[in-house]
Amino acid sequence: MVAVAILAAGRGTRMRSQLPKVLHPLGSKTLVERALDSCASVQPSRELVIVGYCAEQVQAALAHREKIEFVAQTEQLGTGHAIQQLLSPLQGFEDDILILNGDVPLLRPETIAELLNTHQQNKNAATLLTAQLPDATGYGRVFCDQDNRVQQIVEHRDCTDAQRQNRRINAGVYCFNWPRLAEVLPKLSADNDQQEYYLTDVFAMMEPVMAMDVVDVQEISGINNRLQLANAYTIWQERIKTHWLLAGVTLVDSSSITIDDTVELASDVVIEPQTHLRGQTKIGSGSRIGPGSLIENSQIGEHVTAMYSVITDSVVQANCRVGPYAHLRNHAEIGEQCRVGNFVEIKQSQLGTKTNAAHLSYLGNATLGDRVNVGAGTITANYDGVNKHPTVIGDGSKTGSNSVLVAPVTLGTDVTVAAGSVVTKDVEDDTLVIARSRQITRKGWRLKAD
Ligand code: UD1
Ligand code: CA
Image 1 (tube, rainbow, N blue to C red):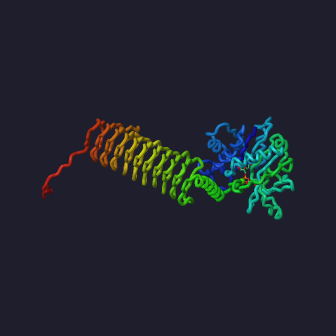
Image 2 (cartoon, rainbow, N blue to C red):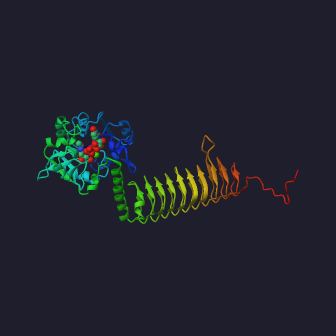
Image 3 (cartoon, rainbow, N blue to C red):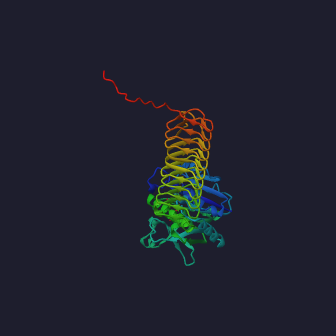
């Protein structure tokens, strides 16, 4: 059994933001969620999040996660003071606890598992993650003896010039035996440059305390300002892209592409420049996405092309051609071998197979069969100002250019709608509908002078 506690009560003044630091996003998740996720590998029995600055906002942002216990730190008097707030909720807890700063989003789950393992194997009172950084500015410096036993941690601002030469830093990621930590927590004092209670002062009062150097120093990057947030984003993207490149995905001009860690790509997918893949998106083999596309929470089949298009919360089956400049949203479902072309918006609608809407259309709340041809400029008028209404178009039907289908309306199979029609009534199978005023031509007509 192991508990996890995340320090998330600070404002993060250096972010210069109204938003609490831990709620800034890294991709589709907030920093605090990333910290929690990195502990998933140890299957924590309890997850505690210490909240203070904008506590309600932080709680709301984590409301979708089960079993989180929020612990209030009403005044932010330092990281040690924050952990003192756990004394009451963890009373009687006898096991180990992982404590993480809420602003370290790049930790790998394997690293956390290894930290816990090292801690338990060595029967340590405390074990902390450290790194040898080329530039240690801002971090607490960790001083160890020859046996890697931690003697003390001194914050950057409290260091002497000589102490600052030490490049071994505290990552803000710790494993403690909780009863032993609980014993020394009340003894902390705020006798330092910031007049804060430092969690790092407990190490001088405990033993044995061991430091474990992380192999990939990028993992422990803490976020204190937006420059560090931007750098962390780049590192995170590099990891994701390296993974997909080695899995057989082509990324053209990869620095211009962004891919969430929740995305799944088959081999032989090609992602063209300026393309962004977000959320629960899956793309099938042989598909070519971009240039210039945004795909979010959508399933794309095999051998689909989607150029300069936006697809959200939708499904596109195999062998479709989408774009340029198509917009599929809110449960658009496109069958196989369809073509959805220039300036076509499809919302909450289903298209069968081999159905085309190639130019300048809006299809909303519509169900189209197979082999339908939607003429240029066809619009489903689905909204009467209060409610949305459905349009149904049967297999093999064709709508003429600039036709308006006023919903609710059903066109049967093999219907032909004349160009410029405004269709307000249902149309039977195998029928031509012309719903426009006739053209009148008068040869030789001129306006007479008065
Ligand atoms: C801390 C460590 C430092 C380490 C660094 C790693 C201390 C005293 N110092 O410094 O040794 O190198 O992290 O990134 O711990 N927080 C609270 N309540 C508070 C104060 C802070 O919950 O009263 C939270 C913050 O929201 C943040 C985390 O604790 O998530 C760390 O606070 P921060 O101010 O960023 O600490 P650092 O100065 O970076
Ligand atoms: Ca920090």
